[in-house]
Structure formats: C-alpha cells, structure tokens
Length: 508
Image (tube, rainbow, N blue to C red; front, side, top):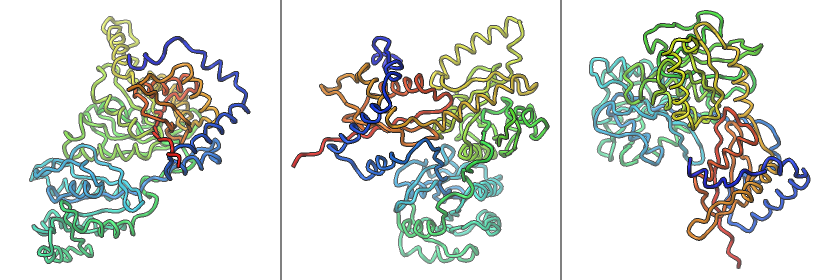
C-alpha cells in the first residue's frame, strides 16, 4: 500500500474539478489528445482500437465465447507436450510420470489468426486399478465441455484396452473427434500410426508433440472443423443473468441454491464435496429471473485433487466461463483460508463480476463471547486477506434459514451494472488529465512517463487502455484504478488497465 500512497500527496479536488468542466470542452480536449497520437509510432491494433472509438457509444459488448478444443487420452501419451506445442510456450507441466497434469487446465491459444481455448484434461489419480474409470470420466467431461476433441494415443505403444474403452464413448458423440498418433518422430514410425486406423475413429494424424512434427497440419485440419463461436460456452444475449456459486467444499453453496429456489433441488450433505456436477437452475429472486449454477466445491488445490474432484474443478472452471457474476460463499465460522483466496483470485482471472456471501452469519449474531471474538477476528481477516477485493459487495446471509437472502439481489445487480459500465472517452481523458495534474508520476531514471491518451476499450470487465511514453509503475496503475472506483463506482467488478508504450515518430 505504501507504493500507492507516494502518489497521493494532499487530498485533491478531482471530483469538483471534473464536475465543473464543460461537456464541449471535454470533447474538444479528447479530440486534441487523440490527434497528438499521430506523432507516435502506432501499430495496426492501435489503429483498430482508435477507429472503434467513434461508434463505441454506451452499448454493452458481448464477446463471442472462444471455441473449446479438449485434449484427452490415457496418462503419459504426451497430452501436455501437445498443449505446449499448440500454445507455442511451455505452460502445461510435462514429466515422464503418468498423471502429473493437475494444475491450470484451460489455456487461450491462437493459430493463423484464429483464437480458441485448449483444455488439457490430464488429471486423474495415478492408480492403475482405477485408470480405466478415470480416463473414461475425463473423456466424458471433455465431450460435455468441448466443441472439438483430440484423442491422443502413443503410436509407439499402439492402442491399449484403456484406449479402446474411450473410443467406444467417442464414437457415440456427434462432435468432431481427431485421432492423434503421438511420438511419430520420423518417417520410420509412420506405419505404427497407420495401424491406428483399426480404432474406427477415422484417419490417424501422426505427430511428434516434442519435436513439432505434423502439429501444423493437425491444427489446420482441426480448425476446419472448429466453429468460430463455441456452442458449449456460448454467452447468451438477453435472458436471465448467469450466476456461478463458488466456494470451497461444505460452505453452504447447495443450501444457498435450494433456499433461493424455494425447494430441494440439490443434494445437501454434511460430507464435503457432495456436489459433483454444476446444476443450472432458473430461480426467481427479487421479482427477477436468474440462472444459478451450483458448482462442485473446489478442493485445496487443483493439482492435489484426486479423481472425481479434478473433474469437479474442471467443471467449476467451465461454469465460471459461462457465468457473468460469481457469488463466492465463505463460512464465517471458519478462518478465511488460502483456498478461499484462491477461489476469489480465480474469479478475478476470469474477469467476472464478484459478490462475497458470508454464510452462517446467524451463528455470529448470538451474544456468546466466543461468537463475538470470532466476529472480531473475521473483520481482521477480511481486512488482511481480502483487501484486494475491498470493492466487492458483501452480504451476510444464512443459506440454511434464508435470512438476509433478499440482500443478495441488490448486490448482484450492483456488481453486474458495474461490470457493464462504460465511461465515455472524453470523460475518461478529462479524469486522466486532472488526475495526472494533481498527482504526477514520479521521475524514473531521470524521465517522467506521460499518459498521451486513454480510452475504455471494452466492458465485461471494464477494460481501459492508456497510451504512454513509458511504463507506469504498478503502484501508480493501482492508484489510477482506485481513483476510478472512487469517482465512478465500479463496485463488484475487476477493472483492467492496459498500457501501450509508444515512441515518437522519427522525423524524416
């Protein structure tokens, strides 16, 4: 926090100054700043962003959901190596030990200008007895969550009984399935790949994920069959707003959904992790319809998740992809844990709106000393562990009794309104100009980076772009973010501030 404070100086009159500015003056200033960018080296992306400003208006943007390509197969056939090859960088963990993929599972990728998501589904328990069931379960999830499936087989080993087990399931789907014969490092191994025709999944695509051989041809073929917009993760336009209920196991997510729905829709059990599949429910709350998704409880860490819990985490990520706002449920009777913070960070990474629901609050409303102590400790934990989401609306509820559940609706509406909010370009530049005049960026290496022009490039979440002459300190960017929140609200939504550092054109 100290890094932020160095920019603040004396209390400013930013709000009053902005209120005094004439609309026409604001627009003229913004046009002048925009024109000054012509003196700087801009790339095609900059030009497209600036060209889009004229018709941006105040409309809400719906970005189409990227198509999802899932990679399945038994352990140690090279799924993660293939993911890394497709991404062009080393993201997925690759080891010669079966079953090491248990961390992040969804990646954004691009090939020849087409963007898509890759799901690496390699996480199950390395328990030989349960391997058939685990691989089958993984394939089942992949079929459910993907637009296209890549089934990877080790060509040097050939098809095993586990592979054939999965093939039976893949034959039943109407989605495109590509049979990838991996570890075909040179032409001598081609006959081994050809032998996989017998699986009945069509032509085997021989590749070497480690060396890159054949991967470009595979991607060309895959993208021919890949839709431009995902059919499984599509973002509906209109209709009930979509709410994901997240939280670690046994914090009361299913109880919350049942109470909101007014009936027992989801199995509630004191055994942590009862819920395995996301359950979509249309629920009426506050005279409005909402689509609630109750997600499987996230275990301590995805890479520690075993078997079914791994797939629960995979489905949770998918639910978050489809949601617009996440309600993270926290159990007030327990200390805020690393798990809780990790789940909140997952929401921030996904760019979704956020509401924090403190459940079992009725237990702290009794006069007993230990409950009063817990309340005091809880406030301290919130201050320390959740300082980075101090902007998220908080509701204190009891999912079991339904107490204060009516407070959830205004919080959801506030978070979604902020998520959709757009600041006109003129106003945003006036804000930046006045802010910098009051709180200039400190000199760094004898130079002072200047902000040339700023614009809101998108909503959901609100995303701002600053054209600058040099890098702005992270603390200064956080300060800009905080002042944006103080002046324009944005309660319940992450704010993204991107920089484009541009150099002055060389005069000829």
